[in-house]
Length: 351
Length: 263
Image (tube, rainbow over all chains, first blue to last red; front, side, top):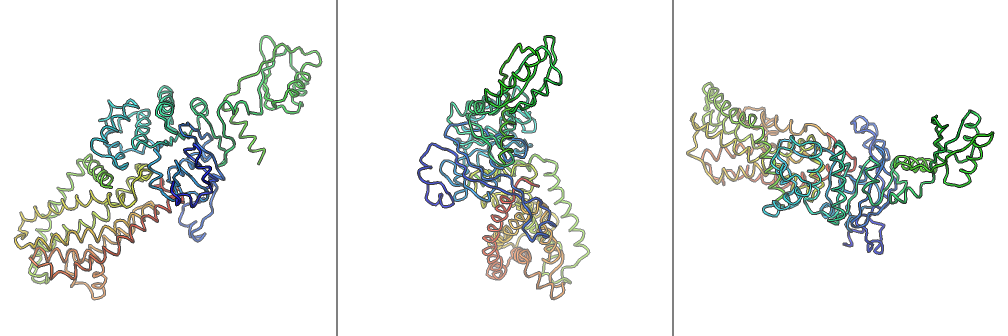
């Protein structure tokens, strides 16, 4: 790490000695609300801007698969673009393997391999081999070294038989795999994957997820995966950052997210239900979403509530009065979407 | 650096070859232009125009042929970067460890080679219709070809910087190409222009390129063409760093505004 690389950073030597491959420190980015020339002139070259991300900080350990999860427009891609050096932040620092992108952009780009979500990031009229040769050249590879790298990375993504087909003849799954192969060409240690399974069928999406996991586990790469598919992040990521409206709401492992989720869901079965029972249930403090399903053996109530024993006790007391008989109480598994929504709602409450 | 620049050149050549009909039409277009000029030359006598003892056919053909160098410079980089904006490849290219200067200059390489082959084709067809090539001064010609490239490349890079910021066909290219056609003495000598326009003409690089090339084909030694050569060398020396700096600023602006992927 050069001294010069630290000049815009708030990160000290102690921090750098850690095993973090990517350090994002207090990143903020705004974009102009309009790129129209009239707006620019009206505001004398300084048009109003909107905040895409605000004070984002996180660290990715070496050999970790780190997920950035959030809805469309949450700011995931902006973070990835800044990591790749394609967008300049308003404030904050990005270090990739100790290299500050602001001080040494070319050195930073040697550290990263970008896998864009855009199918249009290749030349349609060139073959896969010609495309990879071009991008390999831009990574400074040529001749026999380049040929061997192309053979190696395409074998990894199972595309070596299709190398001499034009890119336009590739399916969406093949295109995504080729994008991953391109990201691996320069032997970067950090891979930035922007929605790698977007527009890919479930079978190929599963294969891509498995492959991404493999390059982390077997090849020791660090991966930052940007996705809005919560199940995908849950399935393969070591840690997940939940992003909402430009802010990081939570960073944790999938298991920790489940454990830390403040809300629990239960399925309660009882013999009958009327408006009075329902009103009493809703009146219990700490009750969240509540739904009823009439079944042959009674009524099944699915209810979300605070993670406190008292809330469940009070709920059971409320519904079992007036002679209602509770026959079953079961904790229900919360889906990643529900956990994500819970954290997002918490962030709203805090704000 | 050479791998990157070479890669950009090979990519552009490969892409050009995939559009075979368009590629073939270029050469047919050149043949058609030469034939048209040969008929026009029958109407015009060079003696009345004061074009230094050249026939009008030789005069116009050489000018039209070597004007493609400016087109190569202005269109080359701008067209390549514009296509990368449209294809969606620009971001991926800029995410690689290749410097902006190499990307800009590498993007021009194919268009210059293509322009030089077009010139060769013009000259080959021209000789069939009587173009005199027996008096060429090779040193003068070589020098002016190199200076033409050096002086017009910065204009192409400046034009590309405008495309990065404004996302549309660069007005600079439009102005320079039309100015050169009218004011650089392509179809008629500059002496026919009004006095003040002759001063404007003097400012255009292509005026000096075409003057030098015509001199080279007339067998004029480089020492006699020195004023034009020095003017071009000065332009190249001053504008190249300015254009690369402007290109860098344009990319930085696009990165700050988040418009790198816009088109």
